[in-house]
Image (cartoon, rainbow, N blue to C red; front, side):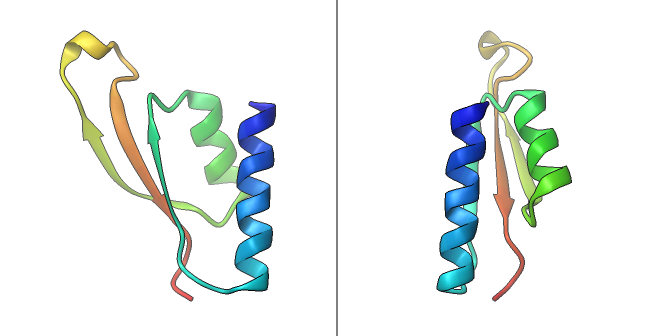
Length: 69
């Protein structure tokens, strides 16, 4: 989680310097990751794509996007 937060914060710093829309695509997004993005960042979930059951309950792609520049 510590590395994920650092990466997201670095992305957001870059967006402040060079304004643009950014998308994050997470595979097997743990609840803590989704909670961090929704509570502490401007990222909004825009899509959720489930994969076959053999990938377990976290087997999905979740796409997040920052607001339009």
